[in-house]
Amino acid sequence: MGAADFANRTVWFYRDYQSFTGGHLKHAHYYQHTLAFPGWSAQICFSPGSEALVAERSQLWPGKPVQRWAPGEQDLMFLAGLDWQYLDQQKSVNPDVPILNLIQHVRHADSGSELNAYLSRKALRICVSQEVADAIESTGKVNGPVKVIPNGVDVDIPDVNQLDQMRVAEPGKNVLIVGYKNPEFSKQLAQLLDDQNIACQIILTLQERSQYLEQLDKYAVIVCVPHKTEGFYLPALEAMARGKLVVTMDCIGNRGFCFSMRNCLLTHYIVESALSSIQTALALPAERRNTILNNAVETARAFSMQQETRKYQLLLQEVDELW
Image (cartoon, rainbow, N blue to C red; front, side):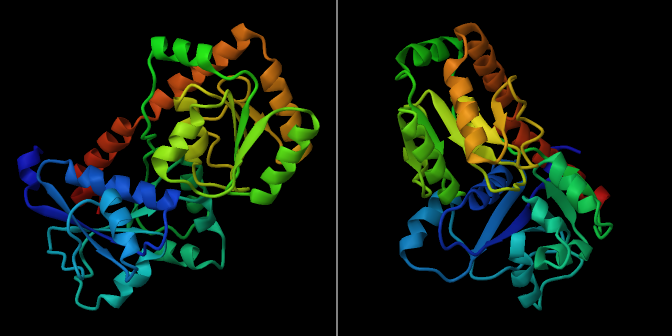
């Protein structure tokens, strides 16, 4: 089918947005992918929020929001996380309208959780990693097709010449700890680094997007501290994309792109182990270090935003057959 076969179809989105998170960012990406696809449009409804949030929301989800959902019979509904609660409140919505369900975390497989309970509801599920797909399918509860669309990284990836310039400009042994997902662990690690006279900076709260990306470019080694489990873990890939030497921990969802001593350094989720891996990273011979950095950039290219957009738009073309 061509784009003309999908004219005037709308995907309806909903968000309970109270503050910025990585999950909101990825949800917004799918909204933007829909807007960019010829023949398709997107509508979004938000939960009540303060006026201060309006500017943030409009940057992530451009366009005028609607007051409530009103999907037509040719439309689709897009749900993520606890958005099912909003759907259940919309008594007038046609139950036969296809549902796209974005699954961003392996915790959807945790028995007894509200997220787990929604797996039995019919939907076409989009998992951000193979690890997430494996986790939910292992429950035996999933009702509907499961597709994997790996998260795309939305930062500029430098070319070879830019990388060479960045490496010349790197401030020696400075270390940045991206630690807002586990502040206590990150502060303990920073103290151990200080005890070893290793200069470091630590991020303990979510920063404004552009400010955060600027921070990445100032340091040679980026320590990305995830939650113990994640569905993907974009911060590590973002740091790779900027040509940085990444030290991180296995969190399940990053197993498809984090390979120790190939494109990053993987460490146990223990502060002493993290310290040892950072010391190893700082002591790497230039040739080995540059090989890891080059591999990291190539990994990021493979997880481009373009591949995410393309795979999602192909899924939209197949949705009626899959449903």
